Length: 180
Ligand code: GDP
Image (tube, rainbow, N blue to C red; front, side):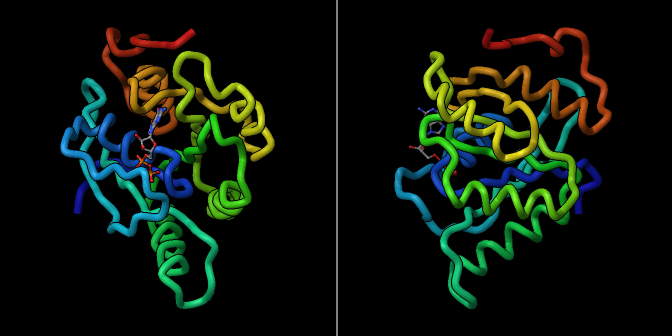
């Protein structure tokens, strides 16, 4: 068991959780898929924030769940990951906009009472503006626009993660690649 603070990446399939996990942990060999709902176990890795380190957990996504189904088990796994986490990174797709599954996830996250950073991914090159504004409706305030794939907004995200966990970043890391 790690003593590092645990951060869980939560969101429906295909929003870019694995890509963000890889980006934060520096993992290159990716388990990334264009197929929504690819079944997989949760993955854990360590992210170096440029001083402090954190433990990152990448979860399976939530799909339409019926009791006892694989999707239901995935949802339970997600709930467990949230429970174990000190902080939740709740990822939505800035291009797709807010879907009913996103709303279901928002409920899970809100019920947990855990601190949350709402992330609007796939927002590279100012794309996905509509989804960005829709994400306000999830009730977690302003989303943080990033592109996990292109590495945009990751510096700001690291700053927010450190702030939420009360971790001190070295000066050079505090403002790195803000996208605006
Ligand atoms: P997960 O199911 O939530 O873990 O999502 P994945 O990380 O597997 O990504 C799903 C798809 O979205 C893949 O085709 C990724 O290449 C793509 N993707 C992930 N992040 C970005 C991004 O920042 N921008 C764009 N355009 N595509 C992304």
